[in-house]
Image (cartoon, rainbow, N blue to C red; front, top):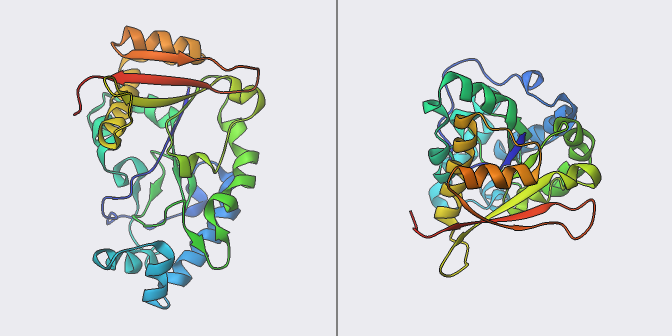
Length: 260
C-alpha cells in the first residue's frame, strides 16, 4: 500500500542536527528536479524580500518564512513526519504509533511537496515554505515542473498494491496515476453526512485518523475493493463509485456525522 498525503502549510521548526543531505532523500529519481527548485528558492529568498514574499504568497505576518527559506542549506533537518504538522498530521499521530506501525508508516506514506516533490516520513528535511501552487520566476509553476519527473518515478514507487490518494487538488495535479496504476488507486472525500458537503477541518482530521487506523491494525489492502471492506470493518461508513472503465481510479466517500 502506498498512501499519498498532502503536506501541511504550517511546519515545525528545523532541528538542531545535521543540515539537509539532498542525496539521502528517498526517490532519487527526483534529485535533479529537487536541486533545481532548492537552488531557485534559496536564491529568491536571499535577494529581494518583498519579491520573495509576493512569489510565495506570504502575508506580512509570515515575513519570517523568507529568511527560513534562505537558510535551507544550513538549517538542521528532522524527519519529515516531525516537520509536517496541522490537523491531518495531528490526527495521524505518527509519534504515538507502536514500533510495528511506525515501520509500516515509513514504508507506505509519501508526502507531496512543492520543494521536494515527494518524501518519505523518515526523510530528514528542514522546515520550509513553498507550496505546489507557487510559480517561481525561472522554473515556472511547480505543479508543471514536477509532472515529468513524477511520471518517471512514481509508478515504480507505487509497487503492485493499493494506492490511497489523499492529496489536495494542487498536489494531485503533480502526478495523476494512469493505466494499471490508476485501476488500483482510490481517492477519498470525507463528507458531512447530513449535508453531503466537504468541511476542511474534519476532512483532514478524518483522513489522518483513517490512515492511523489502517497502520495500527496492520492492514494493507491489495486494492480499492479490499480498502472499502477494511474501512467498513474499522467502523467507517463508505460509499463507493467504481470506475466506469479500465484505467480509472475508484472514488470513495467517507461519511461523518459529527464535525470534530
